[in-house]
Image (cartoon, rainbow, N blue to C red; front, side):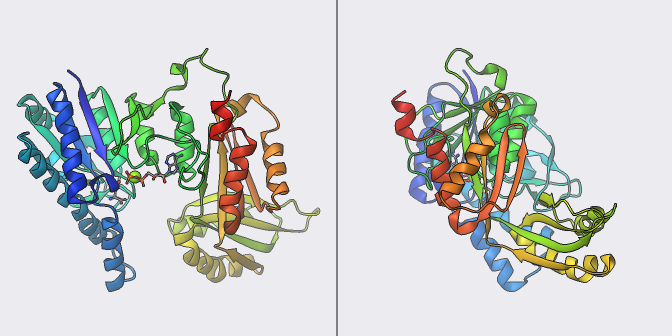
Length: 416
Ligand code: ADP
Ligand code: ASP
Ligand code: MG
């Protein structure tokens, strides 16, 4: 007998028919003698629909009310799934995040899980019940409903698996595993049997939304066996593994494991800023004070003692606010300068632990992009990734060209 935490995403519970299919799947595991905790998302499109309604009423909705609103999506699917299980003769009880004891901090819309009470869930499991939990939500110390950020049901799943010491956390979604890149953009992408926690963290943080980054952090920290699978077809999916668990003789480590991309950032450049100590902090300080996260930063080398240009990226949603801070606060403080903004950019990133021991990945990447006539606006690297900022219009072309050039296309690997 094993204990599984199974999370089903929005598409997997997107209709009454799909919910019935999920119930059948869960019943299968229970009939085989396993204990099952199910975490569900809201029906696909529902969270977006709720957010759009709020924005129609108030363009600056308070985070507390947003959490109150968006958490309702998951409350619908837990009860429908419990009812579908009852119909199949499976005892099941649904719980909201608050009822099941998922305690978070009070950072509405991006709360972090602090503690999970497991007693009630264990009692239910011991009584042979399936426990159905609303993903994406928790409760803070004062009893306010909180949510864990978009895609947060993944994190609920992995956190519950960690708290319960589950044998595996299974993330059922609309693709049959983690691919070398988003299969919806690159038809030659292929499923990976395994991927390391470290690589998955990079892919998730660089835009691959197949797993929310915090879920991967949890899996790494608490050693939760984590698998991504399709809720539509059977298959082994992709297992997220610690690097040391990878089968050493299975193959030579590939240079690049995956390509992530995102068009959700914007770029700002401050032209003609004085090249003296303290300027970076005078530019970024007011932005940090407004709780805006900065991602990439590039400062040009100035001719001695002269002026320089300072470029950085922020989330597209923070673009207008950042531009205003620069114009109203930073430029007056610096006593001059000019700001240029562009929110039609994309970030494309190569990820792979194999690049640690190989030089030349960056130069090959730049050559491939040059051959496609793609201009690189910014570059940033770390031990296992290289990211470039390019024009948003060229994003998909760049992803496909890099996928082929780095030998990730389906036919290449199959023919090896
Ligand atoms: P769910 O609603 O089940 O949580 P998501 O839409 O959040 O599903 O995540 C699954 C989607 O992630 C896929 O449909 C796919 O388009 C996208 N995706 C992005 N990068 C990858 C990747 N490397 N491998 C698999 N899917 C990816
Ligand atoms: N329903 C939430 C969202 O759309 C959480 C999730 O699906 O994981 O972001
Ligand atoms: Mg998701």
